[in-house]
Length: 70
Image 1 (cartoon, rainbow, N blue to C red):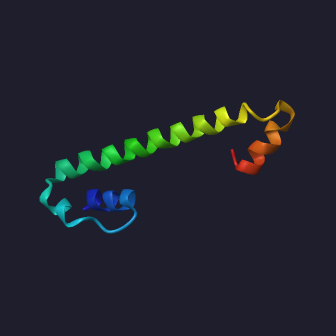
Image 2 (image 1 turned 180 degrees about the vertical axis):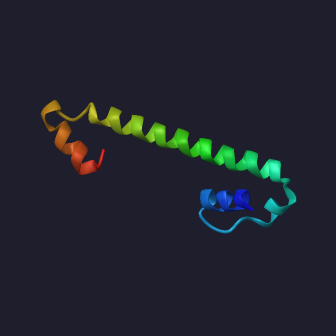
């Protein structure tokens, strides 16, 4: 049941009906894949934000980071 809850959190809503046809192990693999994809996406977004700051003059980077919440 914890695996279904984890999948629902990753998907941000109710689960599709086909999830019930997966075994518990397959659901766990799917939940892990969603978690890993989210971590990779977060890291890529952080890298992109830092790369974008390279176009901001160095004297303003600290202020821009604070405004952007970085």
